[in-house]
Length: 252
Image (cartoon, rainbow, N blue to C red; front, side, top):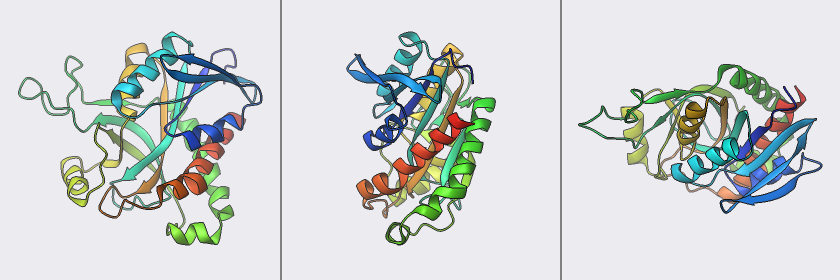
C-alpha cells in the first residue's frame, strides 16, 4: 500500500472501532461534524479510523468528511450484518462485491431500486482493494475461529465459519422479522446480507472516485430469531473478527 495516502478504516460499532484503535500506536482524536476521527498509523500506513454512524445519511456524511476533510484515498469498512443468502450463517463473513439500497423506490419516475439520475441500482466495490481484503478474511478465518472459547462456539452455534462474496444490501430499516427477511430474499434473491450503511458509502465513494471495500460479520439471520445476545456476540466474535481482518490486511 502507498503509505503517503491516508486510508480510512470505518467501523459500525464502538467495540469494533476499539479493536482497530488497539492496533494503532499513535492515534490522535479529532472531532469534525460531531464525529470523532482517529488519525494515526498502522504498520507504517497513515490511517483515519472512525465510526460510520447508523443509517445511510449518517454514513454518507462520514464518508464525505473522510474524503474531503481528511483526504483519504481508500476506504475499508468492517461491521456486522444480518444474513439473507442460502447458507449464510451466524459467524460467517460476507465480503461485498456490489451494493444496493433495498428501500430505494422512486417509481414510477424511475425503476424500483434505481438511484435517481445515476441510471443504476448497484454500485461496485473496488476489485483490487476487495481482493486484498479477501486474503485478509481468509487468513482470519483460518486461525481465529479455532481460538474462540467452547462457550462462545456453543452459544452462537458457530460451525466452521466461511467466507461469502457478492451483493450486500442496505436500508434505513433494521430487518429483524422473518416476514421482512423472506420478502427481501424473494425480491433480491442474490443478496447475501442486509445492513444499514454500505450502499451509502458505495455511492459517495463512486461520486469521488475513491476505492471501497466492505466486510461484514453475520450476527443473525435477520429474522424472528435475530434477537440473540448481541453485546456478547459483538464482544466475543465480531470485534475480534474486525481487529484480526484489519490487522491481516495491513500486514499484507
